[in-house]
Image (cartoon, rainbow, N blue to C red; front, side):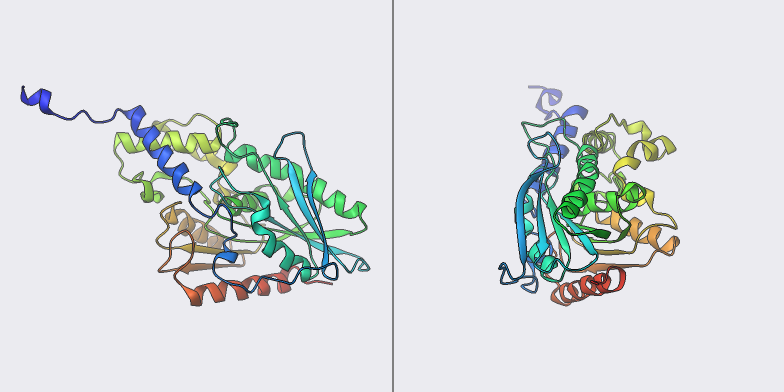
Length: 330
């Protein structure tokens, strides 16, 4: 056998793209699909739920698709002239998860006097290969006015709102708060969440080797980010204005400006599921525009924010601080 015949054939560019995309989806699917970021490290957000605290309405519809459902939590005290709404979006890597996984957080928000809502969105799976981060974000955009209208119909006037979530849900929450706030039915006052992707540059996604700069890595990055954006991305677009324009619809960081709402962010320095470098860019953008924000880095943690108890306590305290400051209960 010749030396040439002994060589192991390396995967082609198309195969590299498939490998990286599969790794990304698998990692996200094994992430925080069934629990909120906060619920993973504290019991502070558990309440003894009862009719004295509020009422929970499940699987209300906001659209025609199977996943277009939401849960609504209404405080027992319905006598106030106005209420703040907090929407908390579930994690799961855009491929798994359900609003029911955040029941503790939603009940806790309701117990504090907020109207709270968990919203499902069409997941990218075998049944819905067309789903993308963009299509999911547009479903959330369609859902919010329906949630507000339903609360109003039940006697709870909504005058302000906040967006929040974990992982994929945090990404979608930021997109609504930064990209869609001008179209919101009531003013968006703040956003909080953890480990959500905020932009998509290969150099920030070393967790999948997309930062290597090789033709294979760039091809894989183009394939992965194209799937997330729901449009064709080619390697030659990286580093050009055309790439930013193509990816802006799903890149919260690219929407940051003088009008961006106060933001509370938590990220793990050893995140192997989404690009930690993207969060550094987000922090820099918020700082450049003087947006009130806290960027809390869990220096010893990965995607689950599991190894930094002091930072977990700080993040929990900051959630209450932000709610009290930017959306106090009346």
